[in-house]
Image (tube, rainbow, N blue to C red; front, side, top):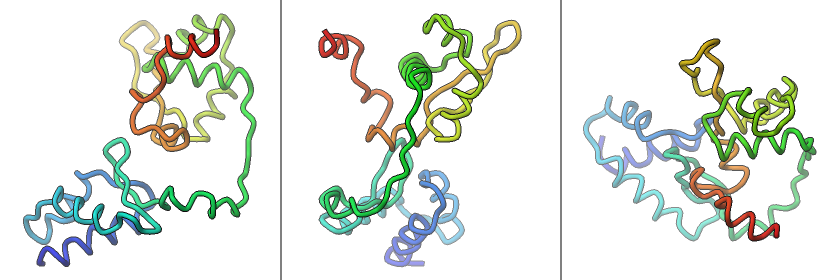
Length: 173
């Protein structure tokens, strides 16, 4: 397999994948056909799709194609299914995003109120949070972190792109 075919192969993998692909998964699939410089192939694909209707995006070390931001105003035709989150869900999500990994008990301590199972279930269903293991403390509670869809929904490249607490306080005051 030559570089052109390898690039087309990577392109088709990303297009047909159910979810964004990591470099590791692409390298594994590509390794059956020889040694290739995956970084070079991905950079070529990014360049090929620059200034087009779709673009190759890397988010949280995963690659996917999405509609170019230049077409946002034209893509507003699609209907959006909205879901209003409760204040409890918004508070819980904010605590998880700023204090991750965090346990339910820690969330409750910060909020000063209990966290009901339905709140976490809603955030899990949206794929905005996910379990991230267990604390090495009595009872071994589950820790929670934000998930990939949280980053994608809020347009963040990483959790480090969240506004800092002092920035938020200056806006609120």
